[in-house]
Length: 614
Image (cartoon, rainbow, N blue to C red):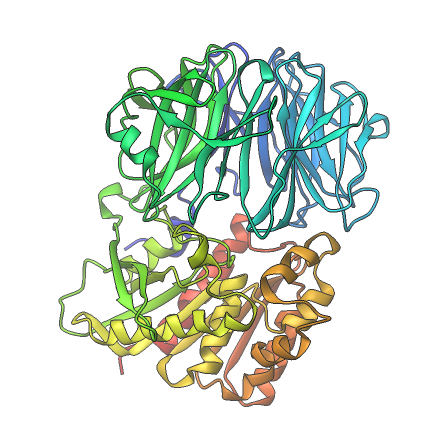
């Protein structure tokens, strides 16, 4: 058996960007303990490390014309991203944006590689403005081209370099898309609507005459759609061919997660989220709203994304991961569908065939609704009711547990734990109506889904019903704490990682730039304070019966560390066995390898102590 340190040294290669020569790609890999930029000249060749920061690199994007990249980096997990230019010839790195107290969201290179765009809250931390900057200028020379009054991000430049696509997020399920004229500052609204509608992944079409995106404006799920800029009309994209991909595109039962368009070649790639797995399709635009599909990319059942086309549109790179293999970068031939793995992220000497894939299950909840979940059993299970279970709850809540690789999950399985990963109501991936089933006053219905999941586990022949723990991070931390307070008798232990203990203090203390979006999901301080107080675990901590472990990052900009201190103090006052572990150089989660080793070794020790056979 390998220890937790070995599992946490399993590497991940992701975030690919194809260089301007079409032969070299960059990607992020965490060989040094935190993600850094690496480049690669061919499949299976030895990669070269390009950045050497102490902190993580969050993305890298090649210039379309020069051997240089723009990369993003924050400090200590504070999510205040600074942009740098990395010269791929001499390795020099230049700080482009400065302003270390502000967030900078990269918006893409201009087509000629002379400028780049980004959104930043440097003027006012509660809102995001849009800036354009010359590639060799410093942060003091950036030109503000749009003064925002909300949460704006930049999509991409138009093919002529004169316009930008902007997305304004009102909540996780309500966005608007605009076209901004870079010179005049005029902004055109492309997606007027009533109610909450998602408009995501906007891309310019060939010649900049149309915009392609995914939206649920016409139904419950996200559809591949296009906007005619002459008329402003929004329509669904249709397929001329009669294959399986065309039938899947026409179906409305699953979300289309996103789309990437290569303007010059008129080719596009889009992905469908089918019960958490990615179904990828490549096609060619034969008319503004019509496509012909190519053969489906030859990829295993997986979770895939982050498409980057080569300059000719003949190939694209993307990240591929699955439950039983770590993330790697693949390159796919658009017209044939042939796929080749370019990176070889190490499994730290752990045999790949020892990794366990989950079973997709569904269980009934309190109202008869079927809740999807992934259930993984260790190889040691004999089916005689002796296996302990960790119920691992995803964050968000606007998120989804998908069958991607999890280092800690695989370690738990190697130690004889089963892992149960439910997508309770409120999760994405199952349609708009499902995501709203936990809004505001319905928040605790999603916690009741956890209780129903435990009932299902009690009926499973492999499970020891007296050894079930709950664990989650961020919003999953709230779910953990809420489950421990609402249903105290069903848990043997609980692990809260960067979780919300009090919605009122969380909303009061979270970053200014996040408050409005979080209130749209949880309820507002002005109108829903009484409800927020009533569902906050800190106000019911005396009901906790199971031992509790709380972990947090001192620099967390999303869930302030004060949330951890409050729940620990309350649990101790209530006589609950509780442990607290705070990392001074981390934010919303743990990115540094030494911290991850310390955190998860402590978590496993905690679980071993409290879920040991009696």
